[in-house]
Length: 314
Image (cartoon, rainbow, N blue to C red; front, side, top):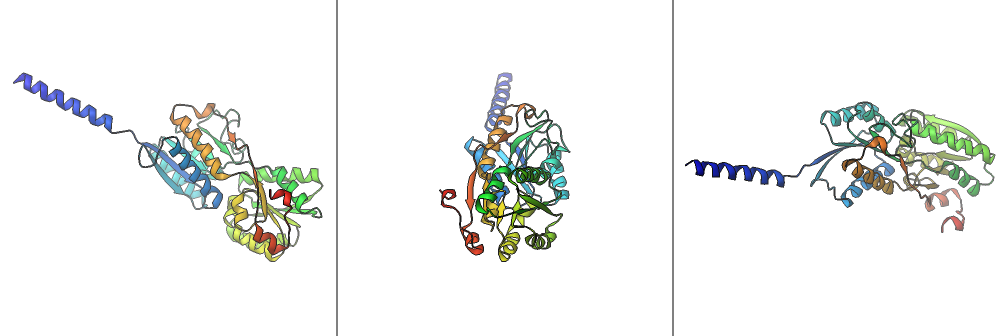
């Protein structure tokens, strides 16, 4: 009887062990995106696709909890708190305000960021080369100087560039400073036109069209989300808009020389995989995309009577 009982117990233990072995650990990844617009959407898609290419598939060995804050800082905090309370294994934060909300709530859970122009000035890391915190990831820093050179190439008679951006976005402040430094070197004047919420975009853009020869907007989340309206007003006033990224051009801007946000997302995914495999964010420098592309909107060019030089279209 004892032998039979022992055999039954042993069989139960073995079955339990096999069952546990079959049940794979599902990694919880929380994703917080500041707002919906083409650049950040492409960033997120690249992140998910990049994880899948590395063998981390949503619904299989990972569970992605995607949350969009709809452009509201209060929502960012609520979502971040949800991820922290849920003890996610990794958090991906897309855009500066989203990243700041998460970083302020946890120093333990690894955070991989993307579409954050300058993590250091946003106080997310100690330095971009040596983060020294639980945060690392990718920057969407665009070639602001090259974008100002694009202004001079397309519009050699332009004298004043209107800088259109949201005053509360740290990433925009950083880029506008770089663009203004480039303007100084190129002999261009510039004026700033800022918005604090989306309701101000129409009035501010309309006013700017009366003061500037060319409108420039960096990779600003609020302006990107409102780009169809900005483009409509600019076209009505026959004003060209040079943008920070491709999605803004697709939405009606004239042209950009910028990065590919889908590829940025895939690069972010590679860093996330390294973290899941044991690497510490503190030891992982912020990464940047090496390549940029010229993109223009033919319909907008036609509407405002601009001819894009053939050498740029190659």
